[in-house]
Length: 156
Image (cartoon, rainbow, N blue to C red):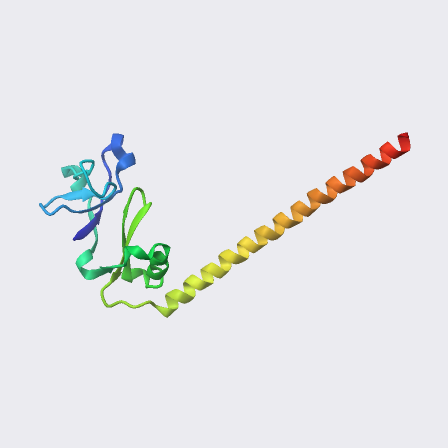
């Protein structure tokens, strides 16, 4: 099955168009936003003229959808040029594909681990700032209570 990107020209219904289409088996293309049913959008002639080939699923293996979130993590281990997706519902549903014969790539794994490390450092710095601000707020409240107690004690 060949997969295409296209320009969604149906302005009123743009919210329910993915901008990604697959062959419908009759020579036409159908948008992937709705996977099944009567809501499926067949591309218009004008939309067909904007199509751009993305990949052919015959050249790829689909990852096991039963892996859940592990599916994406496995997919991300392959080089970008060896992976593809078919999305629906504006990316809420994703089918992951890897090029036939491709294997997880060490350089890609290192890049992913480096990016994960950098994200963790940013999260750590953010957490450290939140701890600092929370401590400052707590210290101010304690100081406020202490000064309030002193005022009450001197009035009595």
